[in-house]
Length: 180
Image (tube, rainbow, N blue to C red; front, side, top):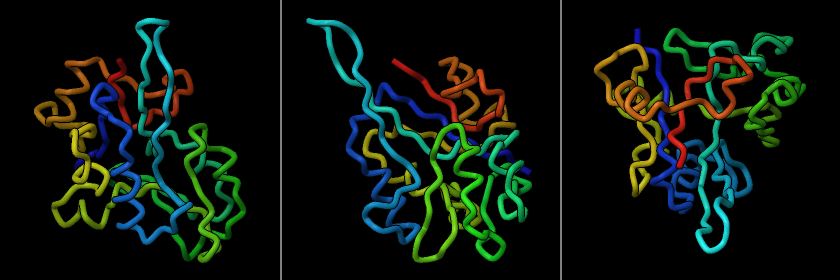
């Protein structure tokens, strides 16, 4: 069974938000709802000043704090390592939102539940890739099996020494970043 993850090359991100819009369309989200965001960070000093765009989403942590605090067991991890929310058992208590160190969960008010990125698991299980990956015009994201040393994602992570956003949290996230 694969263990899915995403590598993000921030050196390629142009901040166009195509990934966010594709995710919203794929998941039927409202304009103000999003499972992923682009954070803009300033870097450098005058005259060599610029911006870095950092796509942020659920990190599908192996030691997911959101899963530990869920009182109903609605947050769970699949055999592929994808952290999901069961809408039938989620009571919308928001404990998971507070526990998430990346603050990437949202309340879907029309459903009364808390949701997040699902790696477009329905597309992945049919042989596809997440919408945010396939729609990016600069190919910022690489999706694949982290346990396959020959996969594109594993090679990218090794070659660029890609790291999680917050390795100090020891949540063992499956999103890895190449930073500029």
